[in-house]
Length: 163
Image (cartoon, rainbow, N blue to C red):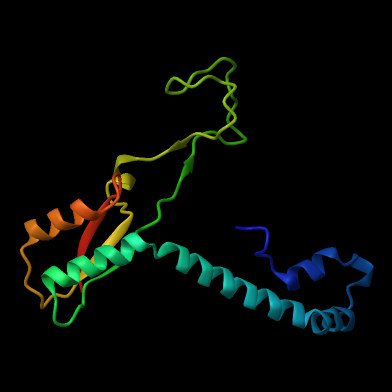
């Protein structure tokens, strides 16, 4: 959750003193702040658009072009989509006492960065991007994987999905 994603209607009720919370006053404040709510919705749509634009890099377009040029030159149906997000599990909670001078994986206890744990079952299924290939398209999978591996950025994990 970001600082700009908040519910204006909840904020109205939360910030209004309890003796001032009559239904007419709350309705009047909803009406008064309606344009702010519309502006916030347009801003959130703008942020989603910007995030989508930044996700499509030159590399993605270049790999799509190469794959379509080699494997589907007539219809150009191969495309690349975003990967799956992984949920981070925080190791230490508020209820767990932190032992003084405790070391975790070689880090000392003064390290301000939070430590996260990724289980094997989680990290094995997570990919950075997915290459979507039509079911009707017949490809040499070894050559396809070699082509993507040649052009992808080092360290990126990907998978083929038939659509």
